[in-house]
Length: 341
Picture 1 (cartoon, rainbow, N blue to C red):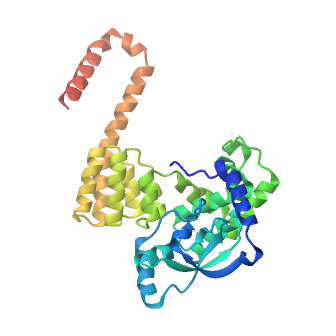
Picture 2 (cartoon, one colour; picture 1 turned 120 degrees about the vertical axis):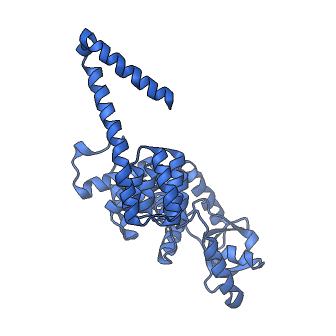
Picture 3 (cartoon, rainbow, N blue to C red; picture 1 turned 30 degrees about the vertical axis):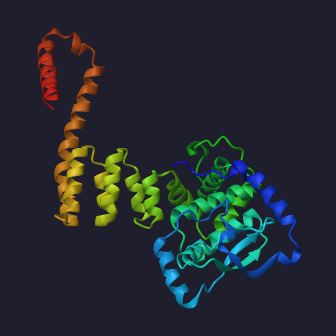
């Protein structure tokens, strides 16, 4: 996917925010106030990229009776506006109720502190989806390292190599010279969010490279990321979209998804999906259908490919006059079959 790269304007952004904060009086460094919704601007470094409409509706119902119980967190800017750190769901709920102000904690924070606090807030509330959690951790590393995305990823990968004891010969070259200080930075981030570097590299970071529809489904909580990654391996766009929809609607198991994703005959695979969506088969029946149909197709294809490979390598058979008639008959029959279809 095209991941939003924040490093390009990071230094300019920090300088801009520092200039605005420098003009604020000390008394405004931290206080609880009511802020007009119109004065709140979105953060340029977002810890959350997707708003859950169900969550907004739930907060709105509660706020209608009790009001917003917990204030949002904002950073005051010199132009009278406030940059949001966390609380987007609460803001959307207030808007839904037609109100124009919200209670907020106003506090001066650096860009790094804002992102870290927002991530922690979302994780503590168990609201963060795997995509935004991973993206937030990567962006936090970019901030703390003052680097681009590529360098941040290289640092995480190098830490993984060191922690797992992988031999240098098996490593993927990153083209970056990673320092001990950089490794300490990314290690502190991993420890801060209570995940292992192995989990982050093997399960979480690859999610950011999935196809767009897969990322959106994970963000919306429609499918577990472990299942989504199996579907993402399907190269054919149309079949991948069908398989994703079927997995969500029919709650297919990982085992079935693996089997379906490996079927090379797209027509057969699509037919199987249609029957699954109609609810005609149980899980055991699905596996039986895949087993009964898949090997026949794949075995013929493999035999054909193997035979053609041998023919291409064996030049003497083409020069053997005694074989010419048989070869011509075989090629003619293949041409007839392909012309028929």
